[in-house]
Image 1 (cartoon, rainbow, N blue to C red):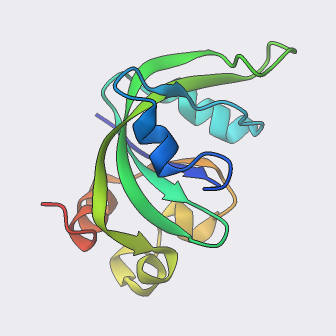
Image 2 (cartoon, rainbow, N blue to C red):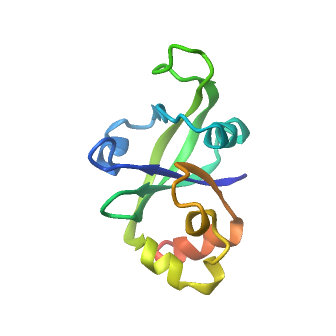
Length: 138
């Protein structure tokens, strides 16, 4: 299993929207960055990810899982962009802010810290475990 982080502007697609999509999940569409697309191509069904509210909030607010592997993005008419489908798993009881992540020395090499603009990014296993703990998840 691999771990990921999915960033979304909460006024465009929020954690509440993701939860409302239910167990079938929703396409993680609209990504127009080659590196992010390539990361989605690496994802497998069952991989887990952090759902991150960007812009003003800048915090991890939930856990999602990949429910469909990379396929054509329905919002792309060119045919060169792909996406995965993700479904909400559980909220993070104590959302973990970017400020908290940056303050934790063990997370200094995290992609989020060093390439904050990338909308889909990998998360290391130790990073996953630590952020879950910081957020109140066992």
